Length: 184
Image (cartoon, rainbow, N blue to C red; front, side, top):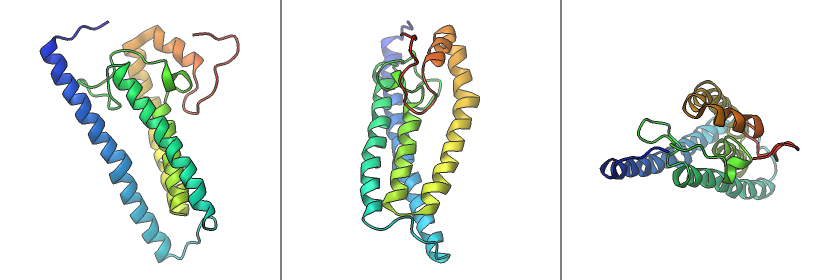
């Protein structure tokens, strides 16, 4: 376990809180707002048909949004409280302890899972083909590339065999039960 001096610990805590708030505003408010405006504008200009009839789109979206928000929030809280970190892996905010409980028991990337469900929900709420397929696909691809290329390598270096063992037991993004015969 890493021991952080109290003065440093207060500074680290403030940085982690700032990163949580900043990344939350960017990823849950600003980026979706821009995507919704862009999608609605393009679909209107090119008379792109709606995805499914109203109110079914709203019902599906209202089911998906809280599920995605729940998984993302649960993952962030676990990283913050258990891992003593944040979702942004900067030097002063990265997790100190490997988190393998809570949502991380079912997915190595539950935050990504939740975020993608949020995007699906937005696509349905706004009945937007571009938002549902274009933005969700682009964000999925970007997140998978980031996680596979940078984050997994970083976690392997920082947590070694513990992370490799965990990686062998738990699914990449979609929450799945662990394979039979595998224990914690």
